[in-house]
Amino acid sequence: MKLAENFLDIVRKSRYAVVLTGAGVSVESGVPTFRGKDGLWSKYDPDEYATKEAFERDPVKVWRWLAMGIELILKVEPNMAHIAIAELESLGYVKSVITQNIDNLHQKAGSKNVIEVHGNTLRLRCTACSYREIINMVPNNIPPYCPKCDAMLRPDVVLFGEALPYEEWDRAVDETSKADVYIVVGTSGVVMPAAMLPLIAKGKGAFIIEINPEVTSITRIVDLYIDKKAGEFFSEVMELLSS
Image 1 (cartoon, rainbow, N blue to C red):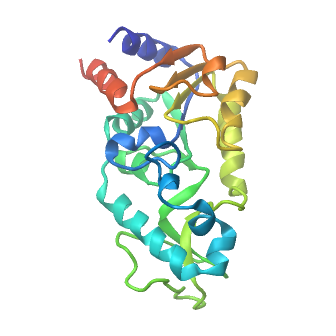
Image 2 (image 1 turned 30 degrees about the vertical axis):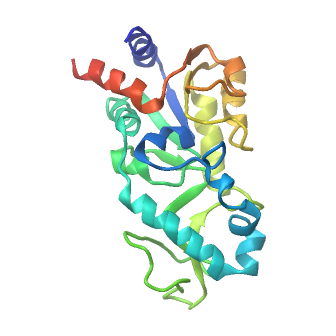
């Protein structure tokens, strides 16, 4: 609890606290990570399912795989980490949440200012026109087609080989540059260009907090390292907020 008290004291005294989250923040909700021993890439070859070229080569195959992900995301619920981060935002301490995740759980927990640098599984976009829609069920037809122009739809996520959405990345860098406290939760720190964000924050003089049960490439630059699972640690934070 001492770490949680120290964390909360730093965040409460901050001028502009920003949170960056990775796959580790959603593991306790039942969302698998991509890397590691039990990650998705240990079961599915990303070259076959998660690249721009794979989608263009066999969109039906990729869409069937993506549909399994959509089905999972629709079932999972935010854990205490998502809930506590949303609460810290509602109290005015956290100004924005930058996430590498595509599971919509920050929004489901109540976070308002969420910057999704890798997109959102529950948002579809047309491959030909500007049409986008939010879904609450797996599409009946795989692949689905645009109601405006009849081109194929796809989840609005970043596949390997694609650039990050410029507007979201620009916002992420801007928010990172403003931060005096930068909280990094559950990210491996190896996925570029998102892995650059803590370095940008550090270069701007921010106090860096990392919450991760495993040492990462980010750990060497942090000012406070909390070696706990996100949900476990933020349960303690919520307990303090409620007291």
